[in-house]
Image (cartoon, rainbow, N blue to C red):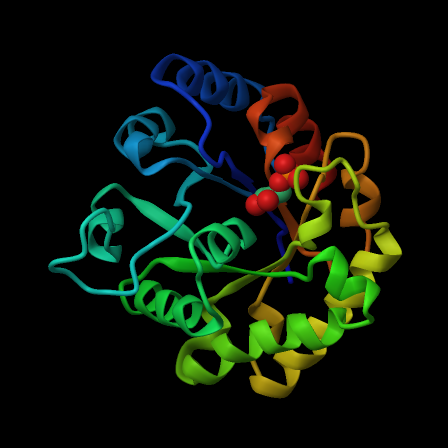
Length: 247
Ligand code: 13P
């Protein structure tokens, strides 16, 4: 990997006023960043954020995308619609979507495939629950989740971004230690290597309570190519500190 990627996932947070203040704070504090940067915003704010980010080094991302192309799918948003707002990335298979919206590995793979076909880079999330970790099943779970995407998308797998987000670390303040994260990233890296000769192009991000204080240590691990940041991406100074740690 050449440049790391720091992506904020705002989740269901924000308002017109708060978004403007946050993005102005982030853009105002950027100083020749050495990494790629994105913010994945609620769909309702894509147009606003596209305008605020125009001409900046911060790419626009969505938090989900439909597995369908178009038609009678009330509430869903297509890749083509995202493209109209300059969206570069779409998170797919976030654990909150898997948990609260019943998204299966097959649905996640279909979404990733649809995004890729339409020219949006899917950020595919994988990660084990606390119960799965305690049962010694971490490797088995993340490999199964990643395999679904690899096998359905064989032709363009090198265009995805992978995010390892241990469910027990999301929003809990319990970050994986750099060693715990690195161990899983190495497993994912090996799986990608076995799947494609272009695995070097695939960034593997860490997500789960990454913050201004712990980012540097996590990002120093050999197989951690960036971060997917929730809470800390909502505060400009914290997000900027994480960006500065990614080089
Ligand atoms: P937190 O950084 O708030 O733990 O969220 C991580 C996450 O889920 C990013 O997608």
